[in-house]
Length: 172
Image 1 (cartoon, rainbow, N blue to C red):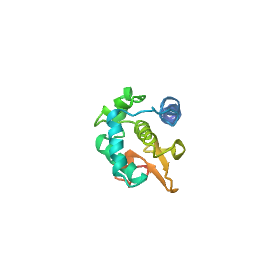
Image 2 (cartoon, rainbow, N blue to C red):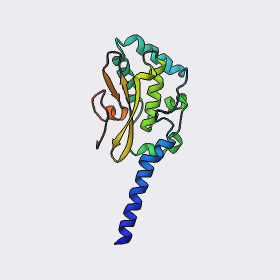
Image 3 (cartoon, rainbow, N blue to C red):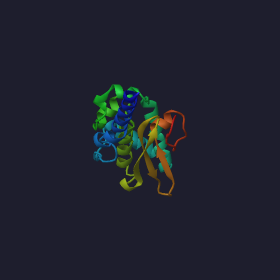
């Protein structure tokens, strides 16, 4: 019986270490990574198109969220099968990695770079938020629009059917 509790405690400590502590140290996109001055050409062109099409900042964000939702697959387990993508900072590689599951931090890094390079948003308007989702740490962006409204940008939540502007937390 004692071995059972020791094993259980060991597994719990490993879970906390692997899911909550280590990610803060090794995910470069948890809000501590800079963004490039220029986007890849295809992203620049889409950004200009969306800038012309959008009547306001919220609509601009929605156009990007819809594009990213259609472009990538979200999957809670699939991204762990590709540890080579966990630390990617090359926007061209991320953009071309079409129809694959990415970590939430990669989605946020891509979206943050897009928003900051659009000249519609400043660094002060974008916050990285972290929550608990299905036994794992999960990150999303919070955007403060110029009118004071706040949007939670979470591609996973949006792809799972949650309304635009709401993040997934808890068990989904």
